Length: 474
Image (cartoon, rainbow, N blue to C red; front, side, top):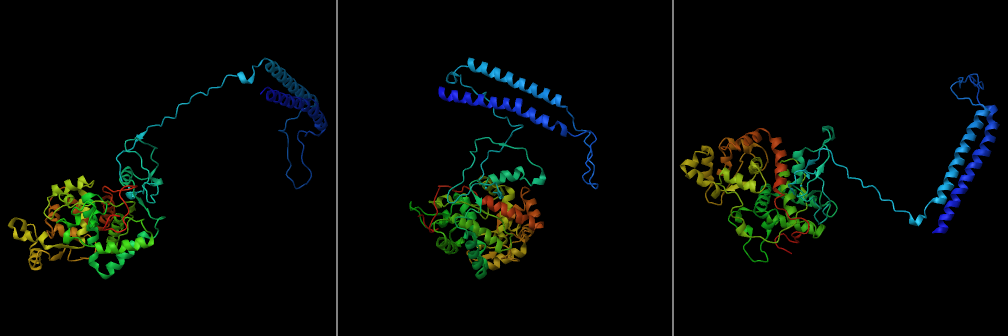
């Protein structure tokens, strides 16, 4: 260590001697050589008559004496510096004994006007709704993205101006509800997944237009019972208990399982063990609406499949044809949906049919019959030759999603008693009037409400499994 310090000191002395030699010997010689060539005040460049004359009246002029005096002063300052260096060098403590320098601690910056973020977890994009739009969320690739601990407060920067198209607080809250799900979830692991599902729906709808309506109904009956985990598809489970599809609210009134099986087989052939049955149902429900006239909307993916299905879970988790508005609102709120979502999703009855056992009783009850348009009552009596006979919710445009159904509700032409009651309650009546007059606005709300529905109690990450066949656990 002493040898290294000695070498360092010798190198420093050599650099100082070189500087003194340059300042005291070389520079004065150069200065004296160029004194006669310093520019004169008012000198003009006459090398070319066409050139613009350049006046140098603002350039400082120094005599040879002034230059030499300045150099001598500079040399003296260097000499004093060198003398001081030698004195300090002799009296300095050895480098090994020098006390360590302790850095001054610096407090972390304090954010200005911190705004706490609503910590409510929300399984979305943003857009989804999300979204997210998105919110954007890390890629899943068969595993859930890491999400913020909802118990931690976050600090968000000041909101940019509207010109930056920053999401509103309401949109941020909505997107947060879809945490763990992401639009384009299979873009890398199974790029053709959504196309395979869409093609299956398009092909089936072309052969049988009645097959669009049962698919969103499957989604609703699946998500409201045990979350969106495709438990409704299971024919049996390891426990051996009766499964959801055997419950009276399902049974013969739900269909579309064969289409699910067909598309799932296509997905497994394309990318085995990647796309869940629960995501398949959500994408297929969107496509069923699209082929029926609803504008395309993005759907986040990333759900995984449940491994249990119990008939006992169905009771009390699905609205009934004679449910009151209070019961429906209470049920929807338990699932994270509000009154507007209730009315928006009821609009899915624009397509599809109802079985006579769910509405025929209305015309036989003198009180309930007053809520049914007499012409519709006549059709009910004529059509319902058996409890399992069916009648279209909207006989005008049975296979087309439009706002006509809301106008029918306003005119007491609802098949189901529960639908008709929504037009009598002040909490929901205005929504029916609004969507009846604004079909485009209803379509926009429908996509958001469907994504909220499809985010109920989802399984993500390493929860559940990706079934190879939707009817059975692996």
